[in-house]
Amino acid sequence: MSQPQPTITDHQVKHLEMIQAIITRLGNGSFLIKGWTMTLAGVFLGFAANRSSWRIAALASLSIFGFWLLDSYYLRQERVFRALYEAARQPGTSVELFSMDVRPYIPTVRWRKVVTSQTLINFYGVLSLVNLAAAAWWFLR
Image (cartoon, rainbow, N blue to C red):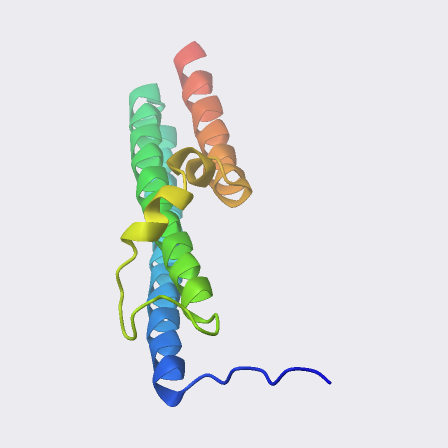
């Protein structure tokens, strides 16, 4: 005979829903950051093309780098809350009911892994390369 599975209470389900709502908001924030990055990079590159100025294109690199760091922060927070969710969903968990304390999970999510994650490298890395190529083009002309 198999042993009966422990059940999750309604309060635990509500707690998991609260954590999931935070994860969703962090994901939406990351999406908005990517949109602002594309917008500002396009504006800077448009001005750089209009004035043939490598300095303006270089300024776009600064904004891309800043948004990369900000997006990394959001992604790290999302991963930390996912770790909390994973711990809270376990039967007989030690996570206090309705706790949003993520401090025990912060050391498990390394900054370097987040900043160099495939998603961020693909988005910000390619955008940076295009921007630097444009800046080099106007600098060498």
